[in-house]
Length: 230
Length: 364
Image (cartoon, rainbow over the protein chains, first blue to last red):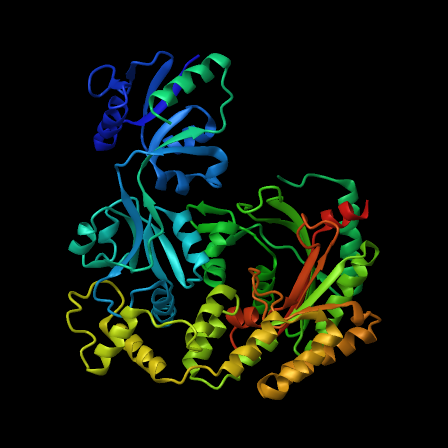
């Protein structure tokens, strides 16, 4: 048996994850040609690299099909109900930082706090006959956050990409999305609400709580974690 | 977890439905699949976290019924009938994100009275019906009346907008509290709002607003700024009134003692006098039905955190030795719901639901 380590299969997230492990003496690399999603691990025997979409890693950790996985802390919180019961957060990797925030049109000079949003939403519903729409792909996190803060009269509409454009396109009145610099939001005439920060996300190494490991695997895992300084 | 076939529960369901029929209920059934739009409109986005949502290629978004009340109210309105009584028994479906141990699919039996002629009498009748059904289990009964709190808010000496905002959040205690603190001057005005009001007073609130995008218009932004200025100009809620609201919200006692407290509060907050009269008349009606009102609990905030649309009398029956279980039965008056679905002329209604499986479990 081997310890399976799930890592994002492409882009900067993959490269930086490789760098992070490399700096700790564990060489991760794609095995074959660039388009093949197979990987190699050097420096630690008994560890297998599994390249996956970052969005699938939470599910694979929960199912116990991988022992360790690197993905955004936002994705784990969104996709796993009671995430702490399923995975353990081992280390923030210090990259892939992004804030999950709520943004509204910058021209809404009357809306800066959740209190404003709630009362603007009530008035909006009276005028337009439907609830204020918030475009997002983080349905659970946003709904929980707004419920906790007592915001009513909103409706979440699904947006899996180009979320910042939904307001201009009249398919939403506000957006809830991740942003690192806020530049795209500003370019789309949106502003971040001052108390609308839902989560500070970063690439994070998680351990599945689901897996029962053999004695050999437990040793491999311990050795790996020791090498990583965890 | 799903409730499966169980002869003991089926016998209990039959017993309950007989009691409903004896009380004059017409037995009705409702489709399991309900249009999501009606439920979303009533309950908002929160319902998505509680109900199963599915899709139909033609009908669009549908929900597995999270309760019978909404479809029963719609059916009653469509029938054009005035007074009516309904009983039903069937499965309801609720996701259980918060407490995974609770069943997500279980049988619910319910009884509803649509009748505007003697609302206090109908309240007492529904409560007595459930109390009698559950008598052998020796449950704790809790009651409340959201109408008292609604009347108290309506009677505050402040601007209408504040009252409307408080009433809108009666069912969200945390937001309600935050609003009270702000209107009472107990929490500071957010700096961005203070600055906005300052600019608005100079007449340049919209200066530098930039490109207007989206459906919400400049006029709507201006209207809200006007509302914020009106609010800033209004005197803070008096500390006395906030304290009286707190007294109502925090009230927990046996019903006769609670009634006395409400009478005391009504001296300083006369707007609740009628609502308190109804509490008293209801207790008398309950006593006439042979119920021991001395043992009944009354809570000023009871029913404020449920998903239902209760706006008057509310009640629940609890197994005190089993705090892990949900309430065995709950109910209340939901005139606001019939109004939301049927307009201002809608018939007032009161009802309750019971979980037969819990009755069986506790009876063992």
